[in-house]
Length: 174
Image (tube, rainbow, N blue to C red; front, side, top):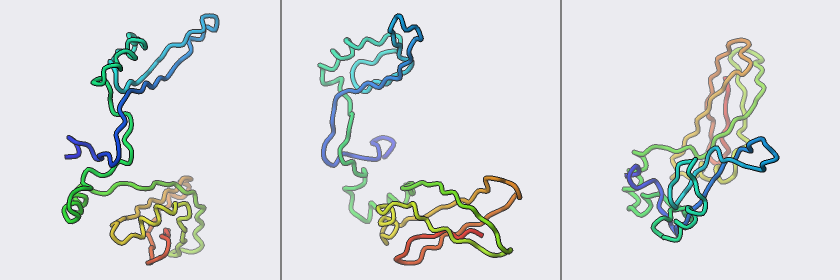
């Protein structure tokens, strides 16, 4: 379903029109004051091959509304939003999880004695993500990886998420 219809539908409105995105490269000859576009993307309007682009012709093609394209969706919602809650939950569990937050933190780890561990508080997680994580109906998971950037001792780390109820999650590194 999502491959054919997309993952989101608009809750409020869809804005139609056209947009042009250009990456320009100066030709290097300052006397000509000429700019060439090495790459561009057109949304809506007549389609052109890069060397044949004609801005006037493209703009004129937008007078016909059939050449417009979607340039913005306000307040998109999941395509499954309007389904009954039990069916929506079944579908979302089949579709899988999505990454809501991704972060990298540097941490200086010094092993004091074998078998000991360090606790890293996940301080950089924003409040809105923490609220989602604490929602009992959200069915969220936290995944973590610890990497030895120095690779001096070929150390192997084990990490575990410690997440007591009504507290912020912590990472235990062994």
